[in-house]
Image 1 (cartoon, rainbow, N blue to C red):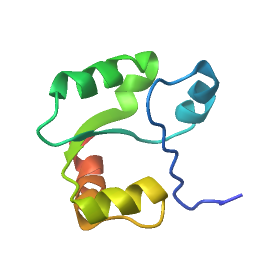
Image 2: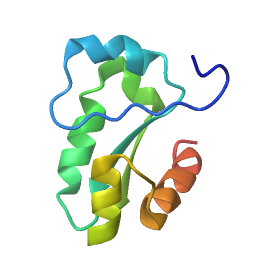
Image 3: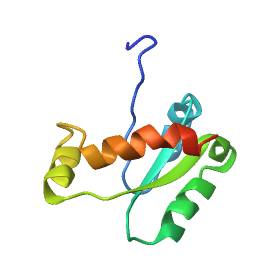
Image 4: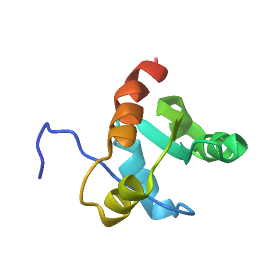
Amino acid sequence: AAGPAPAVLVLGGARGEAFDPLLAACDLILVLAPAGGDEALATLAVAGLGPLARRAVACTVTFGPAGRALAAAGLGVSPALRRALSAAPEAAR
């Protein structure tokens, strides 16, 4: 149990119904999409959250090879991802 500390849940690909209760407990839901990618996909992902979408925001992030490897391995947060995450609460307002 993390207590009052921030928690992160990362999903990739299609979201199963089992994740809805976990997402419902989140204060903010971020949908991260690669910069230069199809922005409609991020918009569709937010819309697909249904009633949870009111707490969701789509952000773009640019990963270099090292940042992509760190994120994929769950070993660290790249500067690009850190910038996207720090800007997300402002975008959600």
